[in-house]
Each structure stands twice: as structure tokens, then as C-alpha cells.
Image (tube, rainbow, N blue to C red; front, side):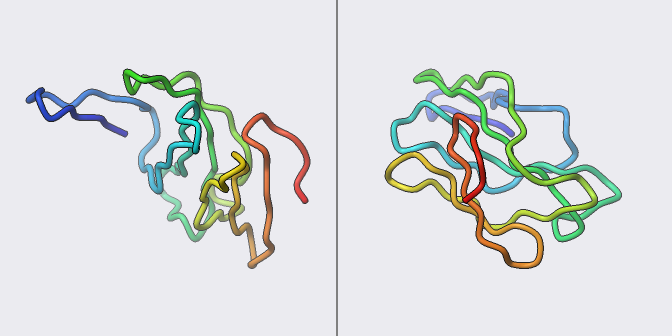
Length: 107
């Protein structure tokens, strides 16, 4: 995953190490980045993982923390932040799940 400032010609890596990334989103308070990631030979419908990482005003991300999913085993779709800082997403065969950004139990 990359960032690029309008005044800079060179993009910089925010998060790296996986084959694919999708649906990056910043929490309502701007402190946390969420994203999906997966590796070949899998495609996201085969299985992917939902991560969060601390995020600061300089667009630097901390160490990613796995919240849900399993590469090649369990799919996650459409993760989005609620106005209260909870991540909402669809998991597996269409079950609705929520996980607070700080961790916790699915509802």
C-alpha cells in the first residue's frame, strides 16, 4: 500500500509484505487504518484478512494487527468504519460481523 503527497514525485510504502491490498480506510478519528490483504495463489473470495494499524498525521502506519479472516480459508467483504469507530464487515457466507478497532468480540 502506498502514499503519495501532491508535492512529492515519489510514492512511499505505508504497508508492505503481502501480494495484494484492498479497501484501505481511515477511522473517523484519523488514528487507525484498516485494509484487506491476501497472497497468491488465493483470490479475495477464496480468503483474505482484515487488518488495522495505527495511523498518524504524517500518513505513517504502525504494525498491522489481524482482526478477522484467514488467507485462503475465510473471506471478508466491504469493511467500513462506523461513526463510533467500529469496523463493520461481511464475513464468510454473508454473516454480518463487527469488531472494535481495539479488538474485542464479534457481535
